[in-house]
Image (cartoon, rainbow, N blue to C red):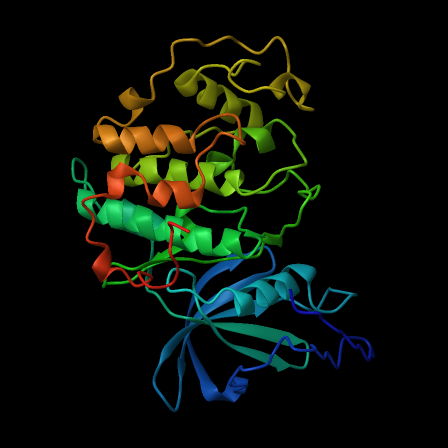
Length: 335
């Protein structure tokens, strides 16, 4: 990652912030160059607006980062996101177009996509589903995007349908890197309070503080199932309920299935023992090759869970026309 140097002059609030290398190659427009159109949403550390560049007419998404109550200046989450997005330039990762700093306001300017996967799924009426070929294309593109991240030592850690943006050309992009982390070897110790509950990997739910790329793969598997059925595969309303919903479908994990599971901080030997799980019954609309891929993304043992590179080679994608995909020339998955 880029080295970041922050210099603060504080008189009631932050007046000057300098980022070393962080803003290189950004157009550096001013706020007055943009016209805010509407509020799109709000997160833990900012508000997102739809806006238009006055001169070019180009639509953008502007994420306003809250600075007013930050004694340390720019939130570490924002610094992390900027650093990572500067590094992650890929057709299936949302593009950071500009960074605008004015007084105590920081705006991240992203390419604009008018739909996220959650809204798209919700737009289908009862009994109708996403076209199977589009599901396959989206799934392949997501594995391409997350492989690109993982090859650059970045975990997303918060993959969910709301963070996946789509356009009318059939392209899907990974967005919102606020929880993302660069990882090293050995795998670092992280907080386990990450990832929206329904897409959270079991190692995180069971309190593991050492985790890596497989947490993103589990999330993508859960999203894959949801694209097919239009409903979350595991929709718990608490961490323990989430675990039990996973256990019911995949069976309660044992040391044979997942060596070391009983040593995880939140594992309890008196967990209910479900032994007759059947994943295929939960995704009846999915073809057998899709179910096979899904099963491999949802393997309990993170060391045995399929990787993004392996997923891209799975026979489920053999009949997908990859020549039409935006990232077809970015890397060779056979390396």
